[in-house]
Amino acid sequence: MKTTSPSIYHRVLRVSAVLLAVLLVFESGLLSPLTKDLAQNSHIYVANVIGVGAGVTPTDLNLVTAELTKQRTELEAREAQLAERELNINLNQPAVAESSDISTYIVSVLLFIILVLLVLNYALDFSREKYLLSLERAS
Image (cartoon, rainbow, N blue to C red; front, top):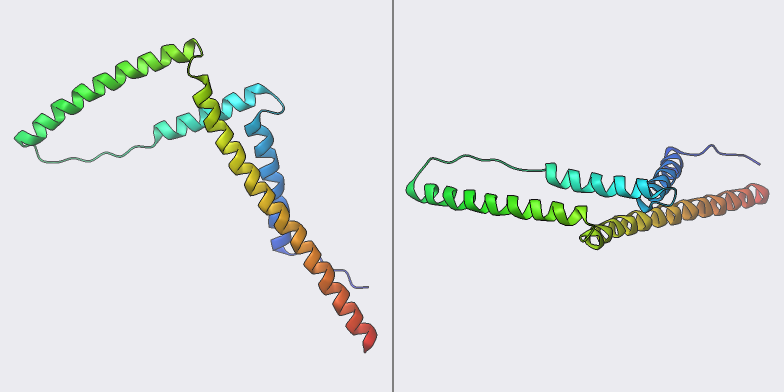
């Protein structure tokens, strides 16, 4: 019987399944609660880093808008200080846990899809080899 070496597609599926499994263990905090907290903080950091800037010529409307934006920024800074105090006393923890659960579910679904593709691929390869073997015997 002729053996075939795994194709690049097989290798990619296996590597991605292993990487997603490791990521899922890390995200869910199965090994240590520290990994779950690290993942949550990483998500929050990445979300805060992304931003956009633009410039316009100054007009009266722009100056009023800039003043309102300045006041809004001050209010947001106060809200951020309040949120930081709430985090220090762990009042805001359920909202952060929900975002972690969503990322864990997404990674779980991706891992399941890749595993289904991997099993389906091997099943189809097996049936193809069986069919080719029956053709060889018939000839």
